[in-house]
Length: 346
Ligand code: SAH
Image (tube, rainbow, N blue to C red):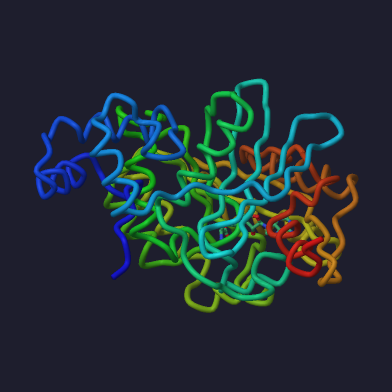
């Protein structure tokens, strides 16, 4: 039988588990804090627990800790990219970005991805499996242990489609914001999706104060379907309706991600169409010059085109920023480091 993973359990579930071991329920809070606040790497470290209990925890349960395989630092020192090995040998990527307003960690939500976006390296080998909530949390904890620095923001924008791993994602968010864990504010968490309608509807009902980012990348359905197979499931109009629903239920405006690919989606007419589409909406657009991926022949828009694209949106009274590029010198585009490693682990 597979062992229960301690770091996936809520305090309440821990307390039930301890009852089963004839232990005092107050131990649950201690253990939870050791795991999620003090970031202990094993039950052995939990020194205010009786030795026998520590032993039982080590022997009877599993305890996820990620192993650092590679860490690359960008030339300017602002970005660090980690490759971590999971218990089953799979590897995942995590990125730390140091901004003026604090550190941001970008985590993966799955091993690989099955969404098939044509410009993305993460999807090339398909999806291997979902990450557990403990594996999502551990990416943040491992970065904190490695750097000794605090984390202010978490973005679920690494490899994988978070809404394709819904239950684990929601558990992860609750644990990350728990007062006996890192106690992040929900407002400092962003979840990015390629636009899965059913889970988006469900997410609105969770009434979380997290930021939802929608990967749009095209101003019309025809082009979007060429770039993103997931777009076949639903139209942009339907997605925008879901974004409105999310805003109504949570009061949080949605961000739209738009990766600019030379000659594909970066022309003035695309910008005009996008401005028309989003007119009057309380939203924010992030323009990201596409990161070229070795296996794909897309090129990044030249900077003049990026600026004129932004200008057209601004003229349409749309909030827009150009995503500062960080770490492109260290394969920071989704899934690139992992792919390189899988091709040549040396
Ligand atoms: N599956 C989720 C989250 C992971 S991808 C989603 O689709 O939103 C995070 C963001 O990076 C998405 O907006 C994705 O479309 C974008 N992206 C993927 N590959 C990229 C590349 N090569 N260049 C620029 N952006 C890319």
